[in-house]
Length: 233
Image 1 (cartoon, rainbow, N blue to C red):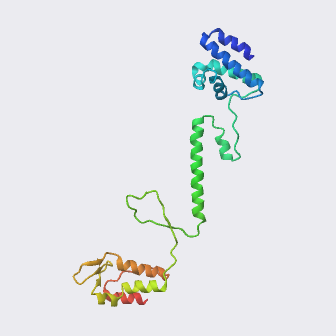
Image 2 (image 1 turned 120 degrees about the horizontal axis):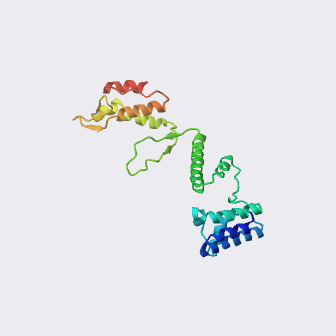
Image 3 (image 1 turned 180 degrees about the vertical axis):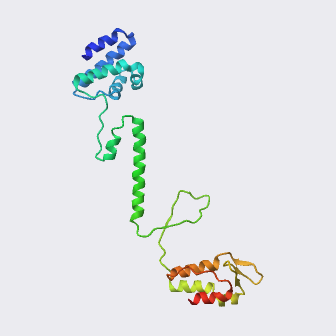
């Protein structure tokens, strides 16, 4: 049916206010055709009509707007136009599928998901490109973000002077000179039995020295007399 004929039929059963709106929609569609545009989407027609006091897009999309949509479709069919807004198809096949989602709200949500996925892939590829990555797994204080992952430089070993300094710190001679002893838990105690260094102090130093020398971490000493044996290896 020609749009002019449909307009007369629709106006025959409409009130004066709706007749005026139908005439306005009809005029906008005619102008679209005369300017050579194939865009007869509700978004475009309603935007132009609203500027002239016509019905807004939500009114046309509602069930009460079926007459308006029917008139717009009649113009699209008559002129070879389209009722869905033409969108540029992306070269990316994933986004090409996104372009086919008709619901704009769903399309927006899926677009955000794809963008986040692309960002995460980039971060993963960046981490893969690093030859050595050490992740700090120490317990963070409450004022630090739990989502933070700190990338630390790879351990490159100790210098000779650094190794000697650590060996001296837990050596039998140094302990005797200071009047200190070690227990099975790596603590260093003074003559009164009070802990100068907490549990794990001596064992941690021996492990560091062992890693620096390319050896397996050393087991904790059970007494002061075993320290010299460990360091002699």
